[in-house]
Image (cartoon, rainbow, N blue to C red; front, side):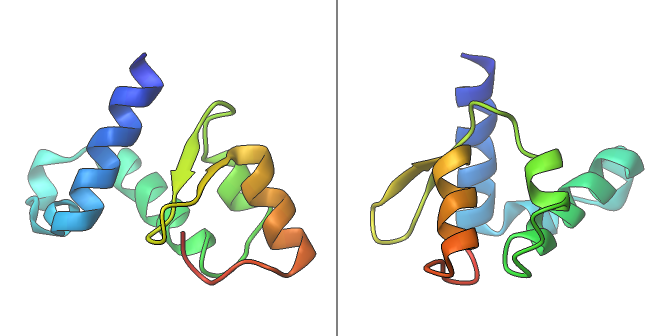
Length: 86
């Protein structure tokens, strides 16, 4: 349940741009660094960083409605079928 809530919050923040409007003082710098690294790793198809910073039971919801598990997302990137960002 915690992962679902976290994923939901991150999805809403990404859609609204809220994650970028939060003042740097209100987010722990270590957490911000990890969030930035994860956000940059997926479009770069960095399969060392993105999986390390993504929970095993995470779900990716794409703009076209496709839903992938972490394992499915990694397989799609490895197969070369993935777009730059989820």
